[in-house]
Image 1 (cartoon, one colour):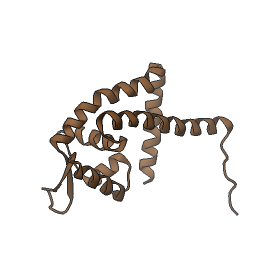
Image 2: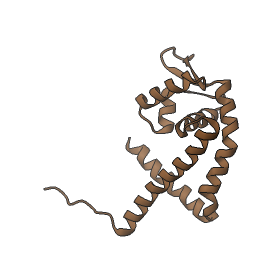
Image 3: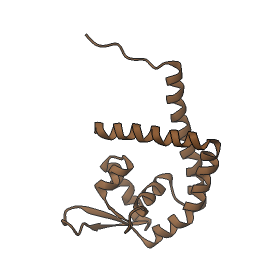
Image 4: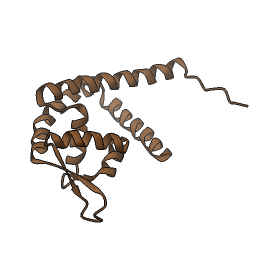
Length: 154
């Protein structure tokens, strides 16, 4: 016998739908600025941000896919577009010669350095400035908990 679904309560539905809508609006608004002022898509920025967080501006493709939460095919397609634009380059992995490493190019580094201050300004203006320190702390705890559980399920 199939168990009945646990339907969302009105408050749970409000939280879920609100989170999705908020995410979409934030990504779209911040992405518009990145595109119009710096020629970067929101996904370009995400890739460059993850790569430039590493000490040598490089990650293996599978590590990048994991950090971004993307399927390998999505990462490969997007990296191909970024490579054509000169933002990143692919290199053979020096450790084993089998895998590929993604490296930020000087053009990619320059694009990131130009866009990051405005992006942080938008994150504050669109999101953080509307929350208290306590709300931000609680949201950080919530996202850490959910992401950890999702990661465990993979």
